[in-house]
Amino acid sequence: MKTQGGFLITRIKQVGGRVFERILSEKNIDAFNGSQGRILYILWQKNGVPISELSKETGLATTTLTSMLDRMEAANLIYRDRGDKDRRKILIFLTEEAKGLEQEYNEVTEEISNIYYKGFSEGEIRQLEDYLQRVLKNVEEVL
Image 1: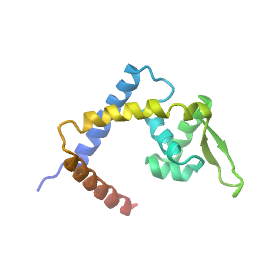
Image 2: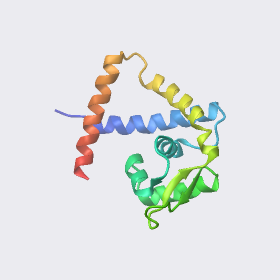
Image 3: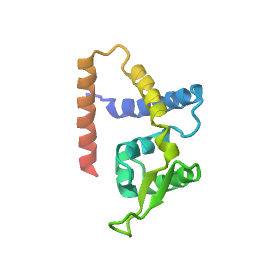
């Protein structure tokens, strides 16, 4: 049996990323791009995260993430702090400016979700997401 799951997931990520960027542009949101939005999303859920955890949660390599964080820090979206517990560990925090962007981000993600799931029933959406979670778990086990 010939399968195309990996190819389809990759294409969805590529095309979905372009659609996400287009929606940002149409809404005149230029404070962050799609890749930075993934980082912001994690920090909106849990502020003060080590780079290693951000790397795991976003799927970005630490070297890629570090350069993105440099740009985000220059744009006043995040700041780095050593925290109180372990002074060796650098934690990433949102600035007040970035905290104020969450609603705009949520509007964009709702719009793209509507595009992704157009014509799907709630049951189909749950089923698809369950399958995708299983695929993700399978590939993460190999790391």
